[in-house]
Image (cartoon, rainbow, N blue to C red):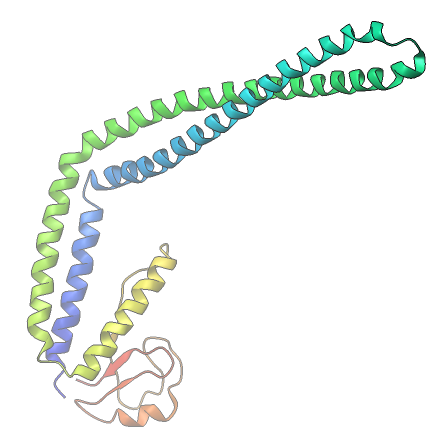
Length: 246
């Protein structure tokens, strides 16, 4: 089999990879994309703060209402003391009054904490506003550079993709399908480990008689017997790399 077309196809993939790398390295792109990501996080943060502020306000309103009701009930209870003629009769109202006073203290303590929480959220909201202003400034600063770089990257990438499509009809469908699945798998692995060398290679030229895969460095067993001369190929049973003899 002649692998020239397949290698041209793989080279176009490498060229696309390089176009994207060049785009990401263009001055202004990293800054704009960072601001864009910060903007999304900012929206989530503001939404959470608003929800928390609203919840605290509702709790405060409910407790304030209960506080008022307890105040009225304490006053009524105190006004009823003259209606009781013995200490035995006073036992229940006194206990009830003490329970009300205890609840009153609890509510006042909770209200104090809620007011402190609301004040803290209010400060966080102001800080968020300042953060939002800075994010918008960054996005405006780098917007033109980002859009120009993005437009160029898409143009160059699409040209290379069209060239790939022109070559596909000339490649063995079995090899092409395997090649594409390997590329997708390696891209997915690269995304999981972004700090590793992300150069994606699927096709390797193999030296006849060598039992070791040049991609994963593992022994390929009897599969190696299929690689005898020019035009032979196999899929490594260990890592799936396409091994060819030109």
